[in-house]
Image 1: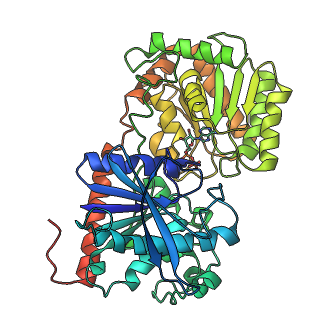
Image 2 (image 1 turned 120 degrees about the horizontal axis):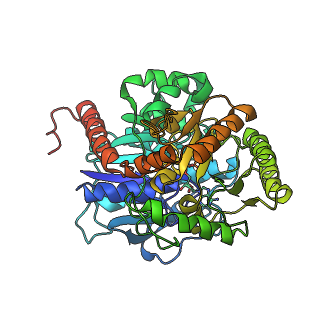
Image 3 (image 1 turned 60 degrees about the vertical axis):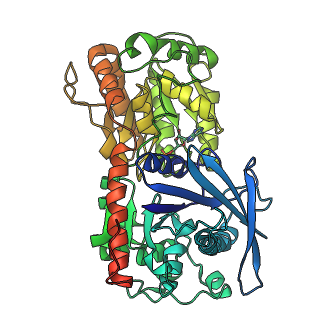
Length: 498
Ligand code: ADP
């Protein structure tokens, strides 16, 4: 099976969050399972050290565009980088503003289509040629591709290419794209499912309407997306695609996030040795943060985008209340919305003897926090899957999460027994400071008075399979279903996939 991933970011080349992690790890895992996965992303100016391969033309109304292709190999996965004037030149940013990003990613989708043509005619592999069986599209940036594939369906070869649309974040949709679509000469979207003008002009909705299958990144969030609270205006479209819609839980890269072999840690450990070998990481972290080195003071952490989605607005007063009243330490790492960043950063200034806040993006530091902190707060208002709570569990740091999306699928609530017969962390429901603060108090009480329960939960979390293995099996089945759907419809009588 041959699968081309099209996305806007991929770790380690470019990453702003979980999408980058997924594109940097799922194709590697698929390849290990025998699926020929390749990736195409924009060639942002920050990406260097990749080899020039070729230049091809994309016909546009405004004149042909010249697209350059660079290529590299990432752990066995061929990765292609596309760039064409005036986009992805020297604008260093991954995401900019609506009226630049919308035309930018529309054009990227057109570049991908023309790139598939170059791939199949063997321009990159000395004539061998490669037709993908399926294009796996991620988020609104590549939402136009399922439509363009549909448009191309009368061409031999093109009629065999299925599409899968994966929703990593429903809030970002690429809305009001019509003027740019019109300017590119892209025909009206006529799928009867897209029966509102708003949907026909919305890049994510277009992808959801035309893809052979649609999914999101956790089963719980797949259910949530049917309702207005989470559907962001596209819940009716989810209902209409209900039969083709599912949730597949993300995995994490078991090699990159591995406390037994992480070069950034002071002391490496695993589920057997963490009781003795994890504590040096906490001591080291406390000393690096210039906080008192004391194993008995709980160290609470928060890592992630400092946004309303992540619940930072109600977390800040809760964290302040805990710092005011309890003997704890706090470390925060993240970047995001300016006003929330200011409020978050102020915690470190106001409680300088026990709290630190860093407004930056630093992956090695994040791993040192996962390995050294006792508790990780994830108070998200919504969370399609969430990776931080999985990484934390793998590193023996207990997550404290709001009950939403993938957080429900991945964090088992502590049953409050002395030996923790169940649980890998703590959960709360209400999006308000008091709910978060009282759940932190519950966790602190457990830390101090039930050390056995705490260690049992750490071990249970560390032993869970957070890898892509289950996800790969599910994606394989979904790819197959999408391909079958496409071929049955577009090319009846065609031999089924071997
Ligand atoms: P989202 O994709 O919504 O931002 P996820 O939990 O799915 O959230 O993924 C976040 C990823 O980004 C994790 O790998 C996390 O460790 C990393 N991350 C987030 N903020 C930072 C930061 N400031 N520094 C380093 N890593 C970060």
